[in-house]
Length: 343
Image 1: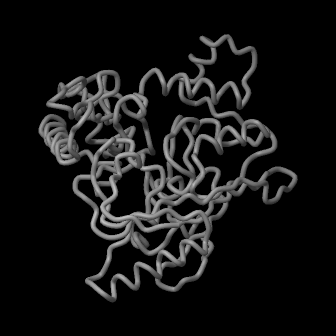
Image 2: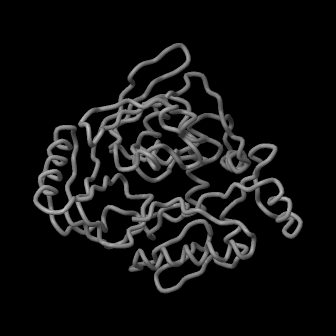
Image 3: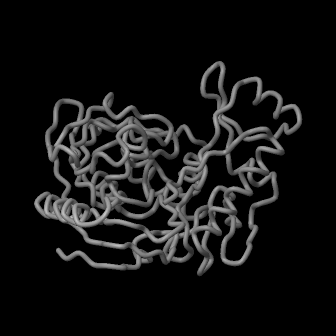
């Protein structure tokens, strides 16, 4: 464990932005974390307050400047079956584990519930923070509890599903507790008896294309992987952070008004009063799909994904996102919200 100075974060963010951290270190156990937080406290007493940033897989951030303060890379590892009852397995995973590795572990052991969330980039620690979701399943559907380190108190606190205040790509850790806790591990409540979720038509179509003779969690996972790889760019090949914008929720009246002018609008009913619009469809209608300016662009296959074609700066991608937000608002009267965290 060594604190480095002026360290490039290029290898640690999937957008491939070459920003530098003033101080950088990684931790693989609680004692290392405590030591590094003491280092931060000591440095803060010598100089001005030293900001702290916890870095996981770097798959949901856009670095727009060099990062002042101490950046700590969470490398806590470990997956274990914590407990089981008649209907469920309780699987605990450390925050530094790669998310898809956890999904593969659960599928191999026939633990049901994570298969629709296959191939989502990032680490386990981000899953409750973002309330990640895909193909009809959200993290909150399989969440049991988590443990997090209280930075100010030095305690390890447990959070239940109610404590986390999950919303659409939201949690308490992105709002009132932002910067106050470091997620250490997450426990998932997974089913013993299969209840398959193929509510998204694309899954059924892909299962049929695969020639799957039966529906299994392994087949669902493979179908999701096939769909994602066909639509979304691989961050190892082209810099991106997946979906850059949230799908906006609007009133039924707003949806009906848009529907009158655009009968092919892609929308999903939330309840009797609200609809969720497909942000990718809105962006595409404004002509952004495939747009490129310098090395910053909007992906040619999925308008929801902004990309770095090489050496784009974070500010360039942020500026592009601002232009997209403005054009969608002008055309549809709907304001998009960024899903990616801007640093």
